Length: 332
Image 1: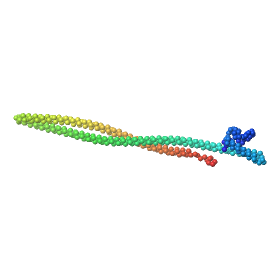
Image 2 (image 1 turned 90 degrees about the horizontal axis):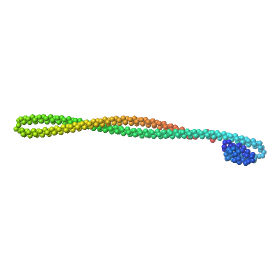
Image 3 (image 1 turned 180 degrees about the vertical axis):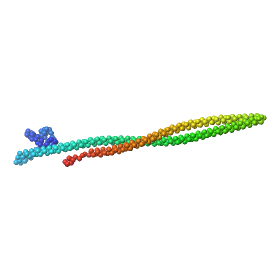
Image 4 (image 1 turned 60 degrees about the vertical axis):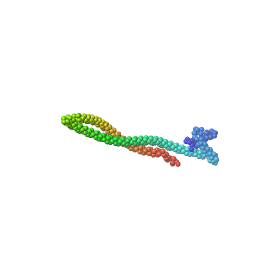
């Protein structure tokens, strides 16, 4: 099929012009006469057809008049020009349809690329959301581990507080026993001193009576007095030792009271630390609840993005499928 603007009638006119000048109508000469347009293959085919037509006309019967031959040639040329014009119009229509189809195809490709870009952005955003969700899950796990550790520490602290309460009760019991023992010792020492005093008074009275009655036994009684003095010295030493023991017990009691005060302060500090741990545990539980709400929100967002991604892929597939050309189907 010849290119647009080149037809058999134009080639025939250029050939006749060259023949009128007495030159050989070669392919290059005809192409120059046509203004250096047209395909050499097409020009060669038209020249061949024209030469065959000339040979046919020469072989026709001599009875056929030149006028009829010219009429037939003119009609053939007119029909050829009309056919060529129709072909040109069909070609231009086909070119316009092809350009429209190519434009629609480019638009579809552009929209497909846009959807691919959006799909890529949505995929990246989905991956980012999944990473954030994974990080929040890890943070929640860490918070749960920290909460479990704090709960265990709280239980351990309560156990230690119970042990300390038991130790404090034991110390209080020991302190009470020490006080009871000290009071018993004081009462026993008082009774012993009273008994010794009464005994001493009785002995003095007895000695005075014996001194008045038994002056002749003065030497013997002096020996008894010496022995009594020794006993008194021993008793005095024992009383001093008892006073030292009493001071030691009082010092020990004071130390126990100081230790008890220290343990009471420690107990107050432990209760304050326990209160702080409870507040920290409540805070962590609130944080875990917030993370659960954030995770639910992220899950809904991920589901929405997945649905939008499926819709975008469906539209992309619809746009990527080539449209059906009704004109081409009718032509076929």
